[in-house]
Length: 485
Image 1 (cartoon, rainbow, N blue to C red):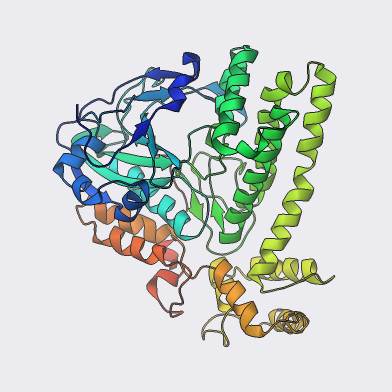
Image 2 (cartoon, helix red, strand yellow; image 1 turned 90 degrees about the horizontal axis):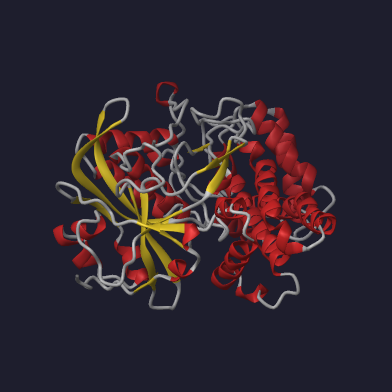
């Protein structure tokens, strides 16, 4: 047993009833090797990054070396997967413990791909390099974009192959999260038909994420309301940058309000609310424009689990929970409108604002305009050559927008600053991500590192011809993305 590297583990989740987890050590691998390490995140966590970014650190983050103070567990949860409820659990992820950071925050340290657990259901418990690098890239892109997200500390190759359609190099991702509590965690607990188990989860979630709600007269209802707020904020962020989660099942809805599980996710190039990429989403359930609606649906499933704690009278419990769920649409619409006004540099309220926004989006859809570049181009004094802004409909819209900016009663530079802070110049475009993964699987990590460097400064000005701002050429288009399992 050893406690180097700065780990300061606590294990509060293991104080919950054991119905909710199973103790499970990681399974050692043949030849762990560090291929990607996040020094900035290590510093935030209070870890010794220089020591961890080493063969000894690779052994720790592959699960070969036990860290003093860790208490490895696999968490139990359920999930509505494409509308169908399934009992799940961590089938290839093992929570080592909760790191207490220098500023007193609590962060889960989890190894993804660390071997079989009691929840593996016939799976091998392992992961391949491509999906683990993909999660690292997307999660760190989310951080750079200012979007709540789990983060990635490291990717370690295992020296072993995993068999999917073909044999692929094995890898383990170290994921960092505010917690791994999910809507599915409560669905699992509700399925045990034990109100005391649900009550323990409510108290734990409030203490960990919403302590200010602890004095509420109805804790379960207060938790539902708080989680709804955090999820609305999250989805509004996704809509702001054109992110499509791709598999927004209830087991992928965190109670902390962080983005989690970046399997078949993607970023939209040309604007279209029906955009989808996931190879397993055959009906477009999780398309870009459906994400608010499906989030409300997922929160309804969360509300169902809380009914026994909301009120002893079933009808009264349903009435109270329904009132919260019905408030979703107005709350989301208000926050979406506020976000879009920031993207267009609009201060204050004006009757024309909503139509100004929807007219631009309709023009973008009709002209297959690039979502990211269009908004970023609007922040400049001149439009880049070669982009289709000479259309009469756009010119008319632009004149109306300029007139509205004139009513801001703030200098134009304030509007441009607001826009630059809400419209990234760089997103992890799908063809760039695939390019990085392809190079990495051939042993070249330089493409991944360069992409990560660009994503770390997503809001900095870049030349319109910069490679990371370019939409894909027809032959570069990514039509489908795939789940890592």
